[in-house]
Length: 233
Image 1: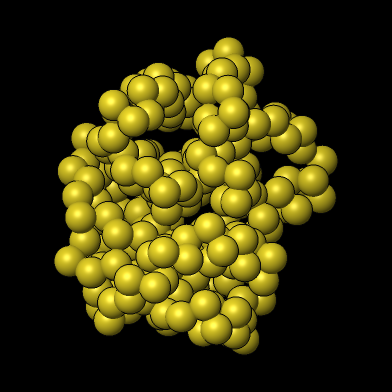
Image 2: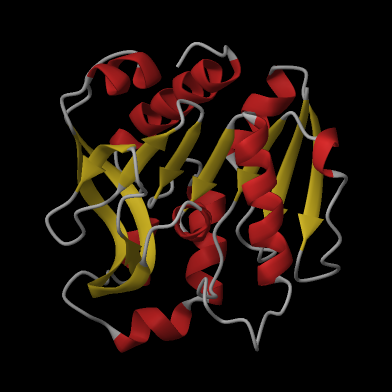
């Protein structure tokens, strides 16, 4: 299984997704847009992962490769392979599928709760109905749900936290893949946003306080990834 990652910043890598992929015997390849925006042949990918980043989906002048990236994502969705988007990645998938992406009323940065909705799809994807889980957030934008998608998770400050579309395409506005190392890197590179503050923007010290739900989030993520590759979501 060739797992291809679209990576937008050196400090937002695969984390737990990469560890899952290696354990599953997958071959990990990358397009690192911050180095060279070269995409692989469309038919050479078995699983596409679209990661986060500091840019917005509509910043074409600053990041001209966004158009090619969106076209590539669209081709993979049409092929029917599993596609997972995280944070910016979820926004890019939503945009490709015809949904609107725009500024959320508030930034969410830190360890904050999301609620998984009581749906059969969530029980299949996650292995159980987890209810509310504390997850890592770092976003200022949000998205409308793509047409014909299922609304999987929500939070008080940002309604659309996760969706499932076409049975094998998942968007997560939050980061289940991170651990202490990944959070530390993001905090250092995003220090300016932390200093600017906000009602739902935590301090660097708060970000470093890893919650007990981290293991739960990793287990949910691994189950979701297993289900996506089983072709039975």
